[in-house]
Amino acid sequence: MTRTETRELTFELLYSLEIQKNEKSEYSEQIEMFLNEQEINQEKAKTYINQTILGINENEEEILKLISQNLKEKWDISRISKVNTALLKLATYEIVYAKLPYKVVVNEVVEIAKKYGDENSPSFINGILANIIKQTGITNEE
Image 1 (tube, rainbow, N blue to C red):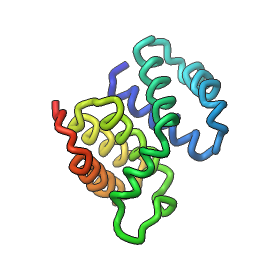
Image 2: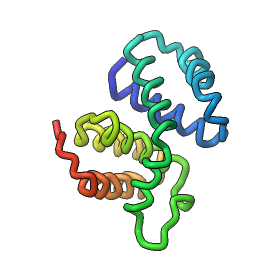
Image 3: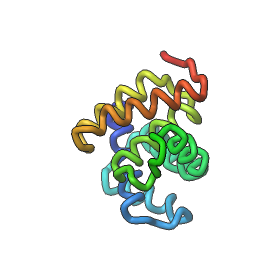
C-alpha cells in the first residue's frame, strides 16, 4: 500500500469520525475497527493511520485555529463542508506537526479533494494550505 493510498484511507476515516461525531475517547477503538474492515495488514500503514488520527485529535484545537485564521473575513469554520474540513485537518497536521514535505501533502490532498469534494474544493484547500504554510514559515518542500 502506497503512502498516497494510506493518506486517502486516513481521510476516509477522519471524515467518518467527523460525520459520526464519535467521542474522542473512542477513537482508538474506531481506528482498530476501520483497519480491520479495510483489511489493512501492513504495519507501516496501520501505524501511519493510527498516529495521524490520534495526532489530529490531540492537536485539534490548534489545527482548527490555524485553519480559521486563514479563512476569509467573517467566515466561520462551521461553513466549510465536512469533506473540506477533514482534508484541511489532515494536511495541516501532516505539514505542521508531522513535518512531512508540504508540496507532497498539498498535491495529494488536492487530488483527494478532486475525488471527494465539490468543484471548488481543490482550489479552496490549496489556497488555505498555502496561507498556513506562509503563516507558519514552513520550508520543508521536499
